Image (cartoon, rainbow, N blue to C red; front, top):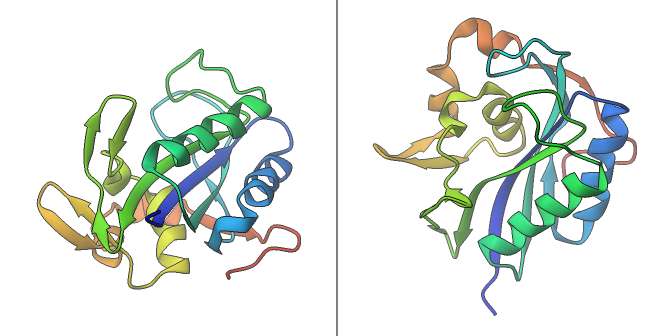
Length: 175
């Protein structure tokens, strides 16, 4: 079976944020390549709510893109995630950002799993932690493959500054 490499983003702003993120890391431990520090980030999308704690993870395993998505949904369900308000508060949100096989980026326009994530280039809370664990990271965009470092540099300075490292998860550091 072909092995895939995926970049996932997880965030929480309801309940015990660190515990929710720890659960993600523990569930993905066998496939984990790297985990960022925990970053405090302002909410994205215009809904008034508490700040998020976010992490970015790189995972690798004998999984298809929809397998990664299924794991993300399982984690959200186990955290009692509800989907009442788009971009609203949530116990846990886990997104598949990018998936590749043997260095080839998977592109999908399936509405259930758009790949690479179409808004990742706009989100400092995804890109800043990703860059911290993979300085050579690149993301496919409609304009072509772009280094994550360049994408971060082109974000609004205030948005970049709003992504602040706050903690490492207990027992977890960059791998």
